[in-house]
Image 1 (cartoon, rainbow, N blue to C red):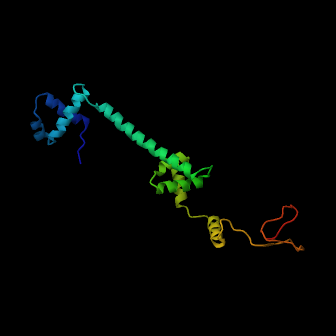
Image 2: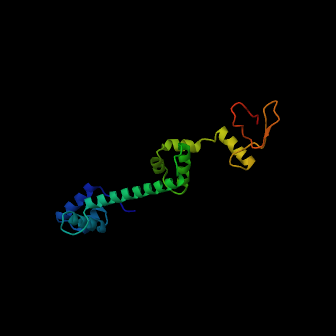
Length: 180
């Protein structure tokens, strides 16, 4: 792994070169690679305009721009995937489920939370929270009936009446109440 030298050290090495020291002497005394010194010298010539090439300042800006482009591409991917998963207005819990699916696909959770406008801490709290009693009952009823929503098979009419209802729905009349 290449070493990273502070800018002050590089500047001192280049000053020693300008003062007349040879590269071989600096390699022996400072225990750094000769290729490193040649690279620093070449970059200094580029920075001062004596050689064509990308200056250090331009290189720093280019690296920052590439990093920002990568962030924006990731955010765009999250937007596209979120649009596919959430075709209509969805409450936060539904957005959490979408973020969980996007995270499973390799998209960053923090970007998903920012795009869908929910908190990262809220997402992780939702993720660790056990299902509610209502959610468990709904899952049990759905599994038991084999349908997406449970429905009663038959209902009986109010006391004193002989009518019955096979659909499990109450009458449209407000005065009649069905016991189901």
